[in-house]
Image (tube, helix red, strand yellow):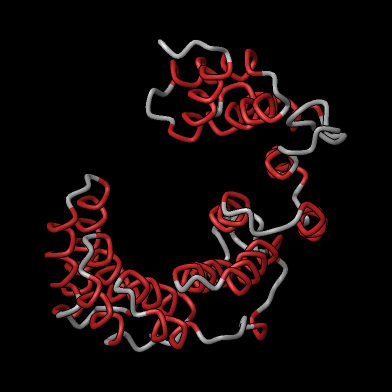
Length: 282
């Protein structure tokens, strides 16, 4: 029994070492020690998952898959998501869809507001389904799953970005989608950002990033985000650009590029505004 206790202590100390190596971006070191944990009696499925994740992050997708298959809970959504991500990265799309299953697993639907702060794993699976159909150039199915992803968890921003950047929805479909997303009061800033991105071509909108009625402290946080976030500032630049106010657009993109010279999201608007203003030399 003392040997078992010592073994458990040893496993915990190795886990701490793995976490520390990950925090320092020493992924091969983390994988080296994590692989030793799964040789010990005190290993758990979580250790298998962590090792697979470390292989995935190092682009060793086949190795990650083999590691996942050794875990006894390899049919859980979390394991299936990572397995699907490995297969998608390996361009094995049909196999990826087969691991994910074609249907949204409604047997484990719970109210998103009752969940932890993490992104819903089923929303992430829906996103991955969408990305696979996207890669196969099936835009209708891709849009379907991106929408399902957002409806499952509106914080799955990548699904939103895919829908908007690839112009997958009509303006009516965008409005309908936004109405099905139930934002928490504390995340009203996110709702305003989504709404503004959806309305960028709508010339009847006179101001971007408008907030609905909300409490002062919520408004204060939202205004801080709108004033300083590169994404919010880009939404404003986008708004001015599509409203043909190229001077204001240029002022905005110039401000963004001073804060973050590598903010590629605003670059097209910056260059197009310079052309419109005949400031090509800049």
